[in-house]
Length: 131
Image 1 (cartoon, rainbow, N blue to C red):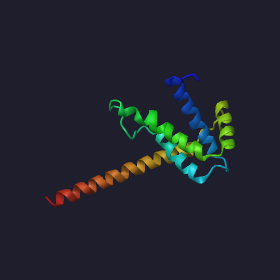
Image 2: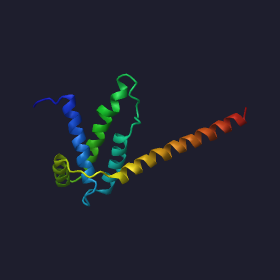
Image 3: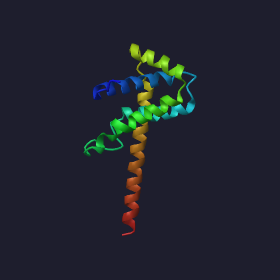
Image 4: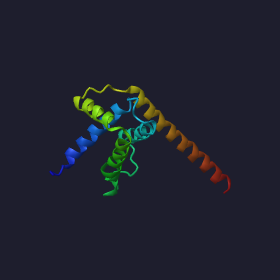
């Protein structure tokens, strides 16, 4: 067995993510797999990491460990014949841009930031009132 280099692994993960995006549109894909895939793709596309990249060693943990584990879990939930068809389509590279998904991800991040900002200002006001 030939060991894959880092670049090869990154390309393989990217291809698998593209195949998962195709598989998500298949009616035979279980709903739970689609929900987990939505979170996985949003996390993969997000510029915000669970562990910031500037933290030595741990900063790359999500890209190197968490993302592949998430892909592995979701792939295991999808029927093999659906994944094979999705991989074939992903290899062809004929994937339509899904602007709706991009807008949804941006809206989710905006809502999260707004909720954190509201909580922060509310918490700060409550903390100062007691002083």
